[in-house]
Length: 326
Image (cartoon, rainbow, N blue to C red):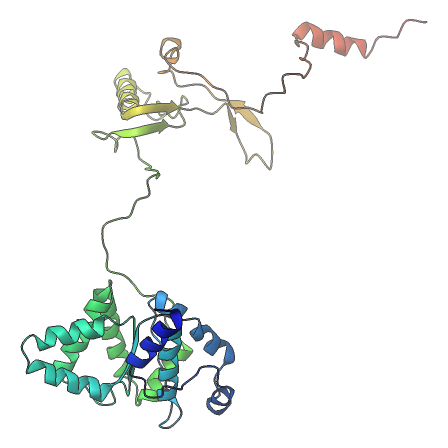
C-alpha cells in the first residue's frame, strides 16, 4: 500500500465532520482572527508527540468544529491515527457499550488507541458519574502519568468553580497559564556519575567506589578545636581513619599549599599550609604524591638554571658594583 492510499484510509476512518477541512484556508484565518504562527505550529503536530492538549474556545458558529476536523486531518497527513467525535455521540456510544458483554472494555480500547482524539462540543453539560468515570478511565489508558493529570484536573475543577462563566475561566487560564505542573514524588533519579558530600562522622558504615578526603591540613584534620588533649587528638586520628577506609577502589587525600587571608583576587597575602600531622612520611609513602601547578614545559624547552640563595645574593650585589673598565 502506497503512502497516499494509507493517508486516504486514515482520513476516511477518522470520522471527520468536515472531510474537506484544511488548516491552510486563508479565509478561515481572517474570519476567526487566528494567529497564523499558532496555526502553523499546530500544523506540525508536534503537540501530539509532546503529549499536549489543545482547547478551541469561541462562540457558536465560530468554526471550532471545522478547526477540530482540520487538525485531525492534518494529523492523518502526518500518518498519525486520529479520530473526531462529538461529546454527545461519545456519551451515547458509552451508554450502548454498557449494555453489551465486554462492551465497556472494547469501547475503552477503541478510543484509547487513537493517537489524537478530537472531542467536539466538550462538556457542554455537567457530566454524570458514569461519564466522569469513563473519561477518567480513558485518561488512565492514554497517559503514562495519568494520576498526576487527574490531580491537575481536580485543581482546575476547583478553580473553575470560582468563575462566573466558562468563557471567563478559559480567558483567565489563557492569559495567566501555569508554567509547570508537579509530578507525583517517586524514587530519586541518580545519574551514573554523581557526588555525595558527607562529613567524616556521617560516613561511618558506608562504602564508596571513590573517596576524596579534602582539606587534610593541620587545623582541619585534626581540628584546631580538638587538640586540647591527647584523647581529643586520638579521636581526630580515628575519624581520618574512618574517612580513608570508606574507599573501595580509589582514595584521594588533598590539602592546600597556601592559605590566603583575603580573596585571592583582592590581595596576595598568604601563608603556607601544613599537611595534617597524621599524614606522616611513613603514611605518605603509600600514596602517589602529586603537586598541583602549571603545565610542564615542552620537552625541547631549555632547562632553567638552578636558583640558590648564593646566586640571589650575587645578583643583588652586582646591582651596586661598578662595572670594570673595558
